[in-house]
Image (cartoon, rainbow, N blue to C red):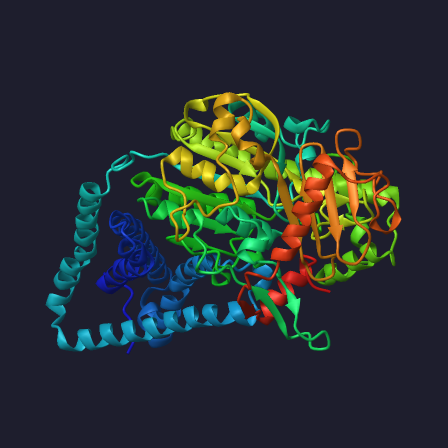
Length: 630
């Protein structure tokens, strides 16, 4: 049953092309079914060609083995060992592609969720090799020797004919620019990016030269406020244009039983909510997302409306690389909404050289020597509770790492913008750069986020670049909110906003288009200048803040409330309320209005109960490493 590697073998070419076609069909069929049939052709051709190239690589390596081994290559052990050796690079490449699709990092390859798919791939390769050996051996017995070469040669043309036919179909059905009457929309979100860390917002360090240049092409909102200091609640609000008390998503990781570490649940974004992706998809937009955050997994409701939702995608470089490939295929024909969520700036900050020392940080990252990074949440709890005190030098070290990591992220975003410019997409697209919340550096006794909504956590960057760079360089100082982003994008793309049963817009957010056109908020939209920020994350104070452009009122459930005059006290150092939550002077005017707004939000909490899902062990591990579980 030896495989003769010294003559042409048609089956590797056939299997290569056929395998590529089957993978492409499995990958693109849902997209075609969703109403984007051209993506089927766009997916089939590249993968069929890739399969053909991998099969050709196998044949070349097999021929080299035969040339080196001579007649020994035809013996049983020689032929099978040679075939396995030639197949190894092919399997390695397929394994690389598989792990990249699964979002598996090299260090996680032996984890059960990653190990079993890889073992299945190796087993499938071994079975394919044995079946092919049997097929060739039996064919040798049935086919006269004089006919073998000619028949093999004829069959070897079949994959080439198939690939050529697919190329013609693709050229006919997938022409660039067709059906592109609407704007392409990009939303780039850098997790945990506070506004005052960007040069465009006045930061003295050169952390964001690429984003600063982007801001010069767009409209910068100087006071953009998130709906929460926690990713899951914040993104649920960004996707729906509604506050957490309206959509009910609070808990990203909640222990049902403190004594049972396995009983951890998380809120789901309800299918009853209408997301930005759903609204755009309903009007012909191809919607796709690349996300790296365990709180935003597709099964938690965040994939609704997305034709292609890829979570657990790794670092920014990998996300941009995958997005770039998608852009060259699926993004060529249909108008699309692309959401890219980068988690690289999330604590614990561990920039690689040269960014680790770019802003004064220590190259050895010595800050983390006595900290178990797998239990980062326990360390954060010690800092917040006062059990561990960080020195000013340690805080400065952390901030230098944060700045270095931000500079690395900025470089990747700059390269993405350059790619868009080369392809002619930058000027013609609607592009947004923002964040879900900021991070603290000891200003109020904590680091990281998911706690009291002080300014370092609440204010986020928001930069919107219009097609043809309209209104480039404009800066708007009035307060806006991340919940305003959904109605703004729908307004700019000509898509109607979601409505309730009575036909009224079912949104808390307001379109920013009038502000962009006028340079300020029209008087009739004064109510859009008030913001509510909520947090209900395990291990933190459940609090609600109401903010205007001048004042912020913070209501606590377990301690006295706080009031700050942000115009004179931007660092929130002087609480205008006396101890015990009683006002030093009776509240009136704007502070009184904010107090009532905060208390109304508290009353509405729990009206919308989110469903919950129990988290698996791997997700729990990831959340511990990100600081969300002790």
